[in-house]
Image 1 (tube, one colour):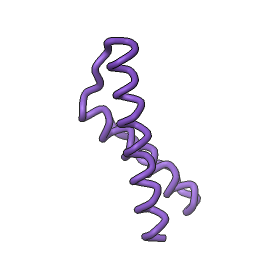
Image 2 (cartoon, one colour; image 1 turned 45 degrees about the horizontal axis):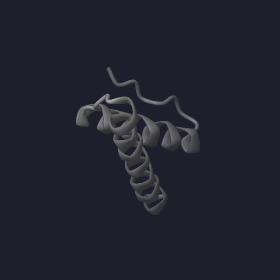
Image 3 (cartoon, helix red, strand yellow; image 1 turned 30 degrees about the horizontal axis):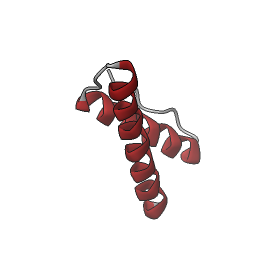
Amino acid sequence: MKQIMYKLSLAATVYYLWRGRNSQIFQQKGVDSNTVVRRVLEEVGACACSQRKIPPPVFS
């Protein structure tokens, strides 16, 4: 399970950094680093919870 979470975290981080970079280049909209971190945590938390069949955490 630990390896799966590591790979998922890495993939989500790369994906959201790539999306933020594209948004900055093509739409002239910057993405805050806190937003990227929050999205990665939400994604990883939701996937982890779906594996354990418990509700995902809610970040405010």
